[in-house]
Amino acid sequence: MATASVTPLSSVFSTSKPSSSIPKPHPSSTVTFKTDEHEYCRNQQSVPSNCNAVSNSRREFVTGMGLVPLLVTVPPPPHSEAREVEVGAFLPPLPSDPSFVVFKASPKDTPALRAGNVQPYQFILPPTWKQMRIANILSGNYCQPKCAEPWVEVKFEDEKQGKVQVVASPLIRLTNKPNATIEDIGSPDKVIASLGPFVTGSTYDPDELIETSVEKRGDQTYYKYALETPYALTGSHNLAKATAKGNTVVLFVASANDKQWQSSQETLKAILDSFQL
Image (cartoon, helix red, strand yellow):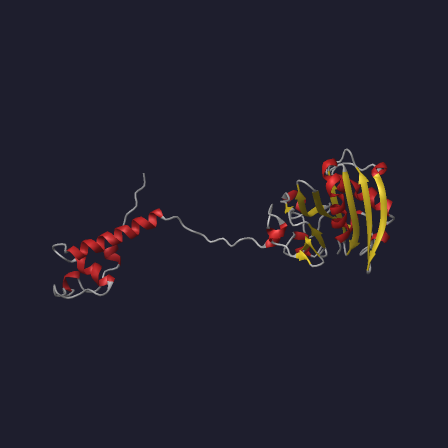
């Protein structure tokens, strides 16, 4: 077994004068500085009572340092990174209706927004909903700034009312025309035929589509859908809204099971209508 030599600290920190040459204070004098006090105690033939106090205090300090764990202060995550916390705790209320709060996505919220692949979007939510975690493989974090497949931007959920999510898809998956609008891609039926599996979480059957409409907001066009999807992984009722901007098609999906739909369909419709880029 290898051994290590240890050099005494006294030889490393020795001074030009031997310790015996250091003048000893008069017994009645008071030692002011801690370093002088420790040196004084080391040079005494007998141990005065105040030296015992010094030794004890040093021992307590060293022992305490060994018992106290290293504390690293970690700042709390910004509200945009909050997970599984009611959104009413960190999102502002909708001025026209305090029963909703407003989520406005910004570059700090998702990898695609930071990369500039998705334009900021916003929508409203009831304050009791919670923002959910997204698996890294679904978030697009691993493929930015150039992703070949769609990814999930954000996801919110309420056990009693349903869930919503924003799905982004590279424009190139639907058209070769750069900076195409949703109209350039095709009709509402053509767009949902391509994006339907991302609404249902499984497959898309055209017979499940029960309603289609077109909405204009300024220069932006949105295709809106209502689907009855009894076999969908997302839920038996799905509402969707799609638009295109830049190099990305953005799909907003609101989903519910039969029980949730009975009590919250109007809420889900209001959430869907509020979505915009």
